[in-house]
Length: 246
Image (cartoon, rainbow, N blue to C red; front, side):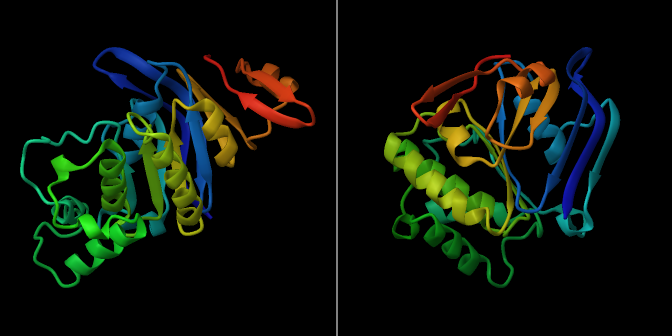
């Protein structure tokens, strides 16, 4: 089932174009890895899908299952959460902010239960009453992921979730994302190209335009056809993909 359709879409900031004529369909069960050079438009693409940046032209369509009373059922883990680490907010309260979009008041039935369920899902329930600023980088990302999934979205969007975290967190993250992908579609931007190609199902190369690869197994012929330069390195009979800049 299709969740989102972008067709011939262009977007940018003020008079500066960033995305030009891109087309992308997102289906239920998708796990799309988004790669590309800095400034190529990866974060801009996410902002357009989230409705934070209106497109200049083209069309953007959301399935009825992706909206509820005007609220998009999309969870978002941004690259920069914009939280003051010195502000004494509890871990549980950070997750509760992910439940405010559907109801402006925090005082509605089941809110704390949903927050704790999300924290349990990411293994952070024991830190519920701790100060968010006292956590490590990996722990903070887990809490922010809990916030993103607390309202049980149909689509989860992550913008470089493994930035400034350790290897243990990356292993936990990708294991959890495999489980979550059984319940929701996922779009993830990552700078760890070797890691992302091992876990996603398909790859979108973004550099002004968008080239979509329907598999994470990429042939040289496909790369040339899509004008998406990616170096492929193989070790014996097992392919290891290294996706380079566009």
